[in-house]
Length: 122
Image (cartoon, rainbow, N blue to C red; front, side, top):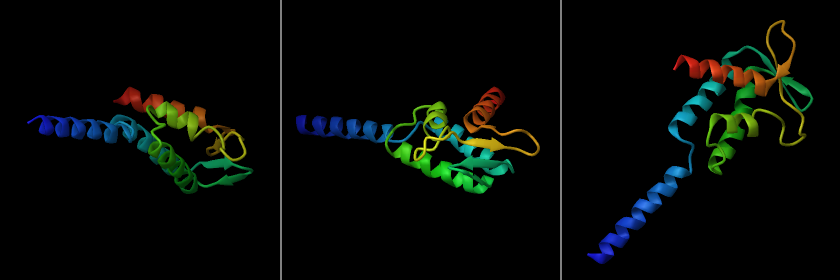
């Protein structure tokens, strides 16, 4: 019986650690919304000296998010914004977004505005 309790405790502890390895569902939903927002925006995104289309920007941010999520570095959607969507991890240069005839703006601010709108609708 004692061995069974120890095994059960180890199983529960292992499940808890596995659950911590990925961002919480609510965070995943918010980040996926932001990634979809990028892709459907028809805006262009400045990264490392070049402008990229929305689909390319989404793929790039998705790769960065996947990397961070694997390492348990995304606990809040704001972590995604700060660690993935603010600047290039290669050059350190800030990402920018340009939509229609508007002036380019920091992508982190653009996405933070959308996150606020998204949360207010929920």
